[in-house]
Length: 220
Image 1 (cartoon, rainbow, N blue to C red):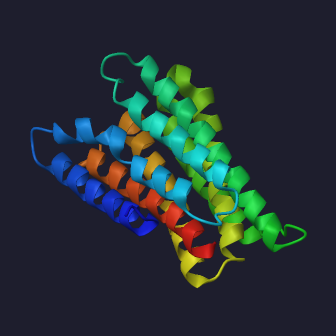
Image 2 (cartoon, rainbow, N blue to C red; image 1 turned 120 degrees about the vertical axis):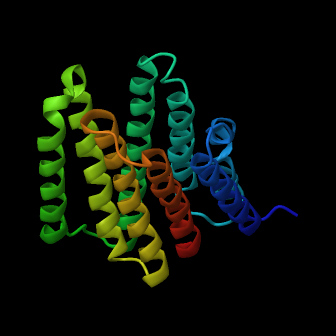
């Protein structure tokens, strides 16, 4: 019988195989595995009972899956990077909406915390200072994307303050790793190639998606 736990374990197995494939030249297996990585998480969210705001979570995962798939074709045509960027932008907006809805279920009035906001604004400022001179025609899209992922992280931080320990840990660590993955991708593409960039970008990304889903499964 296929259960949520079975699907989560399948996601972990696929992720390990995929990441191992990146480290073993020539890189081939990850090209074929990448479109399947998030499917177990999507299926887990679909079959999970009593999962609040289920459709928003599923939609965020589906748009992330779309972004993963589109980025496979960047080597053939650079425009697929823009398409992938848009897909992930929508995914982050959906995560923001999801976190906000969950937050409003916990508190009647959202209290905007200043300390995490300052931390995130410092991160955003430093990242943009580094990237903007190298972005060319992508300056505006990347700035918008950076602002959106920062907002996603801030909403995750606020929600983590309202959730119990294990759920809060998965939520916050997942959001931080999502931002880390996007940051590594941007630095590698626009600033300077990073050693083992493909491995670290995908390792943080896969943990992020898995942890975010896990946080909602545990809290619900």
